[in-house]
Amino acid sequence: MFIHFEDRLSDSPFVERVWRCRSERAGTFLSVAASHVEIVITRHRGRMFATLRGPETKVSQGDCPADGEWIAIRFKTGTFLPQHPASTLLDRQDETLSAASSTRFLLDGAPWEFFGFENAETFVARLVRRGVIRRDDAVEASVQGERRALSRRSAQRHFLHATGMTRTMFRQIERARHATNLLRQGVSILDTVHEAGYFDQAHLTHSLTQFIGQTPGRILRGEQQLSFLYKTTPSSAAYDGRHDDQLDETLDRARAQHARHPVPAV
View (cartoon, one colour):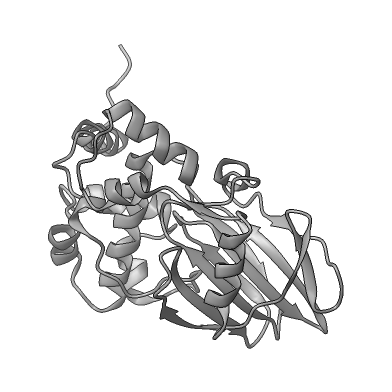
C-alpha cells in the first residue's frame, strides 16, 4: 500500500468525519463507490488547491502522484451545497475551485482559507453561517430508518436532491463498503455474506465487483490499493432488505443469477 490514510470522527452535525492521506510514490488505485460529498485540499509540489467531490456510483481507476498530501471533509448524508448539487459532481465530475491567493480559494464567490485536519469544523461552521452548505434532516432520518411525515415519493425526492442518488443506490454502496471492511479485517466470505445481509456468495461477489472493483477473494488477499475506506458498522437500515425498496434487492439477486446462468436464445 503506497497511500496511507488517517481519519477522525466529527461532532459537527454537518460532518461525518475528516480524513487525510499521503502518497509515498506514484501509482494507480481503485476509486471505490462512495455515497457522500467531500471537499478536498490537495498539496503537491508546492501547489495547493481545493476540490469538490461528489458520490461515486461505480468503481474507477485513479492515478496518484508521488509525495502528495490530501485533507478532506466528508459531509454527512443530508448535507448539501445548494450552488453545487451532488448530481453535478457525480462519478468523478469533480469541481476544482479557483484560487483567491496562495492561502485561499473561492467558493460561492467568497474567499476561504484552506482548512487543516484539526480546524475543519471551524471552517464548516463559517460555511453554515453564510448558507454555503445546508442540511436536510429528512434524508438522515431516512438513512437511519426513521419514519417521518413524508410520503415515500417525497422522501425519495428529498434523498435524490441532497445526495444525487436514490436511497437504494446509497444502501447498496454502503453495504458493499461495509462488506469490504469486514473482508479486510479477516472475516470469512461466508460470514461476510451473513453479516452484511447479502442473499448468498454470488450476490456478494456481484456487488463487490460493481462497487469495489474486486472479488471477495482479491479483497481478502489485499492485492490492490483502494481509495479511502474507514472501519465502520453502518445502521442496518442502510443495507437490510426490510424496507420499501426490498424489491430492488430481489431484482439485484435475479440479475446476478442471470449473469451466471443466462437464458439461452430460442
